[in-house]
Length: 265
Image 1 (cartoon, rainbow, N blue to C red):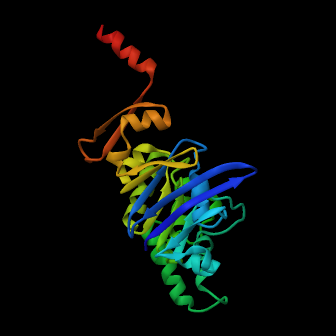
Image 2 (image 1 turned 180 degrees about the horizontal axis):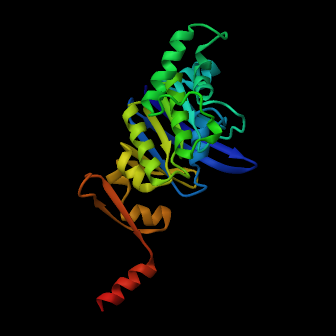
Image 3 (image 1 turned 120 degrees about the vertical axis):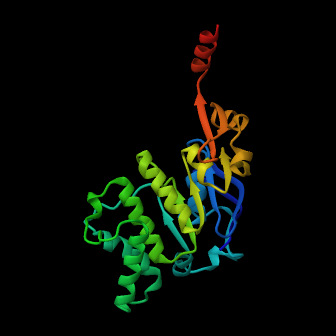
């Protein structure tokens, strides 16, 4: 599935949050969205998955306007994972995952054996086989995110939207989750706070600043010292990791660089 946002603009309370933003995600691509806090990342994602209605512009899935689809049809094609789960109710893992089947069910019931098979397959794929009866509230942040990914899998959507899915996770779980997302092979658009994760996992990256797309391209084209200084206000060195072959970004402050000069002197 290919996805496009075309000239999206959003204003709230007299403030322009997005201004003529356009982007596209090719079938099977993992595309990252990066930018400073308050730059418009979450607003853009919410406009794409219809949590916010843009003032102008449109979103298309395989060239079909999203606003011409019913909520059920859109949910059959697009799955969403937010920054963190806000549920405070005592749901089991199985109950959370099964919520992904709602867009496909007109009535309760149906093929119970088939539904159980989808549930099991999804949990196996995210490494949580046998966790069906565990309480969602007792899980760690990384485990919860994997459950939510499993929910997307049983939803059988072709397009995945992730809003900073690694937020608040330990580095181990950040890497596990990004590995899993990459292995799914779904058309994916994700906002990421960690620029090294964006460099390592994304096929392409969009940089958003002040509600506008500032730059787009491959990680090597986008994540340059000049762009990082201009957009994020930080100094950095960009190199290739000797083991993974992926880009690696090392940040430093003026104080650190002054210390280096003093040591050489």
